[in-house]
Length: 174
Image 1: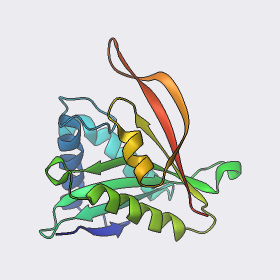
Image 2 (image 1 turned 45 degrees about the horizontal axis):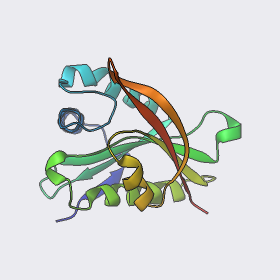
Image 3 (image 1 turned 90 degrees about the horizontal axis):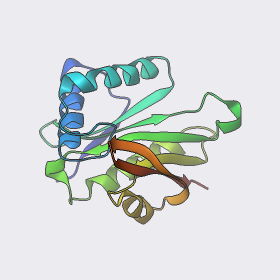
Image 4 (image 1 turned 90 degrees about the vertical axis):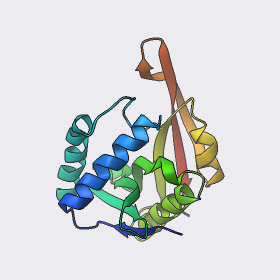
């Protein structure tokens, strides 16, 4: 089974709820997507609404991967840069694959779909993302072609006494 990826799908109540479920399930499984467990959908909703506002303003695009049953199984947000000096690259945020689909290659498929979307966007020459240290994510992104370009030690405070590096990764598209 593979996922079907859609860039900028219509936002329906079912998609909204699917994204909330995905984000909560990924977070509660220990995924590094902006929250720490335990987290409830209601805690995630304001962040998702901010993404929806940015989408309505044309600043952010949503990429969704759905399984054969139409369930939201993966998602990521692509954001352009408002500064003209940085307009040649975009940022990839909240890259998520549902825990029940881990190890099936869906993360690589999601990143490939994000790369395709970036390549189809006029003037985009690279994708930038940041990830939380302590999960080995930099190795995964590295295996997908991203290069570590910076690191801020202890920039992410997961809990008192549990600070992690913020790792900046870049995928040149040229």
